[in-house]
Image (tube, rainbow, N blue to C red; front, side, top):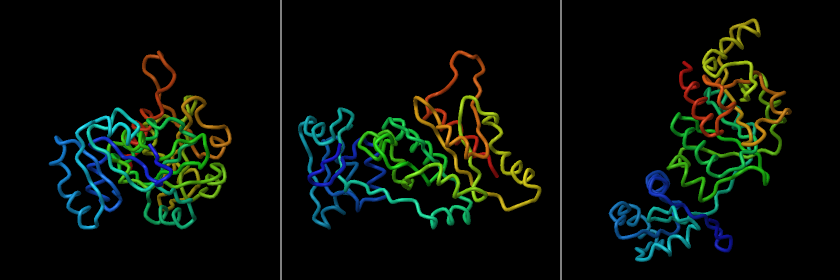
Length: 263
């Protein structure tokens, strides 16, 4: 929940707030918790006291619900400044290429819970770079996504772009552009071999390129414009033919697991 008047975002949920307290305690502007959780945030309270930031034990959980706008606060709410999403610049791409760092590109993931779950999987598998289009169709950093990410938000950098096709064109021959689609021609388990395959297709042994993996919208998947700019389009095959696709967050976890096998 955003407090636009104070330009704050509520972070709630034990895992999310504990990760915030450990990794970025300076971000916490105000803290509220129930008595049973007081012992978990002693160090954070000390650091907040040193900078004269307020923290309070609350007796009524309805106060936490009001602060967070959620019944899933789990007894703690931290208020932070509303995160500002920086636009992706060529400097970032150059750094990814030089360090061989992979990135996730979200093609209008509209559900905050899906966005948070993708962030959680990305953090779990060590993917630090998340790219989203800046418009109303794409979920951004919210109280819900922060909570569902279960602390993963502290380990990723979310960057914004105006045009997905333009980005994909810019990173051509710098990163391996992988789309995801139920009608893809490459199986998900082949992802680990795509670097070698791309080198073979280009007829030379080049330095391995990092991956840019695009995940599509919950209802329509990747747009045709995005798929047209991908080097490969992968699919997750079903062994039983009951359904043709997974939830995008579930699919992301499988894809990132396969990527973790890359040498």
